[in-house]
Amino acid sequence: MQKTFEQSIDATKPRGTVVIVSIFARPISFNPMQLMNAGIKITTTIAYSKETFKQTVDLVSGGQIDVKPVITDIIELDNIVTDGFESLTHDKSQAKILVDFSK
Picture 1 (tube, rainbow, N blue to C red):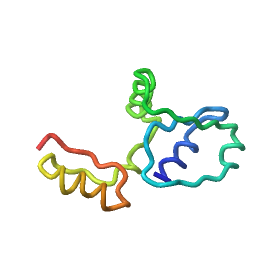
Picture 2 (picture 1 turned 90 degrees about the vertical axis):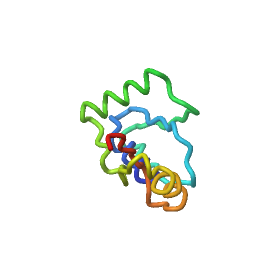
Picture 3 (picture 1 turned 180 degrees about the vertical axis):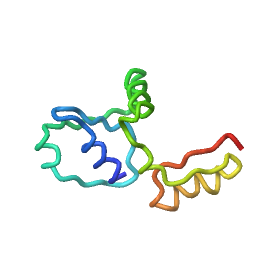
Picture 4 (picture 1 turned 60 degrees about the vertical axis):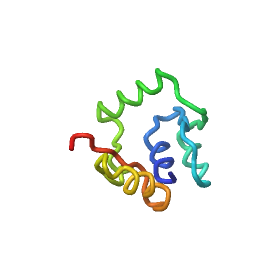
């Protein structure tokens, strides 16, 4: 969470806005100067709009946002409980686990 939060600020254009759309499992910290130097604003929402979701997908698919650093594992569907849910619950080094449906 911490790393993703910091990367989102770094990736935001000057005078842009970072919108937090997830629920954090534990507190995070940040340096306010990271925001002030570029005039970045932070806001939150309990969910995201259809437009925001599309914009995010477009940014990722267009290569403008590199999601590889936050993907911590790729698992098979048959292992989703042990390698997915349990891993995310007990191993705090896990961030995003992708499920490979092709196998």
